Image 1 (cartoon, rainbow, N blue to C red):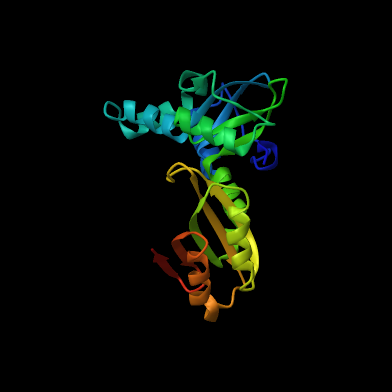
Image 2 (image 1 turned 60 degrees about the horizontal axis):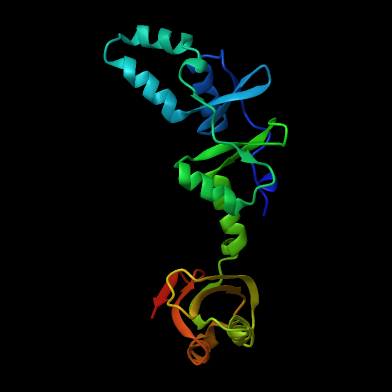
Length: 225
């Protein structure tokens, strides 16, 4: 899943000579927390709601309110922006993007093409949308967490067991995290399962793998084992 398919576009940008007040209005109007700062059509920095709050607070203790408002209307973004911002190439995967956001502890970044032109912006909220899409959680249904032996066919075996009880598969994800060597965890979300057969299904799964939990969002219930 590539950034270019999930980024917010077009990017809402500001000019380096715009004021803090201009930026505050744009952030509020578009309900965003980050603005790429441009100079003659090129990206030169980034300003966030945190930058604006910090810049305002640094002057607030020594100024009257009318003086502060005047200051906010006249300070240029080039004076408070973060220069040389972290950017994301448009053909990066969502996973690569999440790693960058996490590594640099930022909530979002501009997305650029091979020539450095800005195409959009990717934020934590966009990454959250991808997670929801990948897991199929908007369909609710039932999610099973299992631990299986890391060998060919083990994931298919538990998936086929669940299919035998009806319903359709919304997602299947696997990970080696949290599992001992020689095992992996499997997370399967199904919907349309006959809930009168759940007890039988759980027993069938226990014969194939370790059943870690079952979450049934339609019934708002959770079982851990």
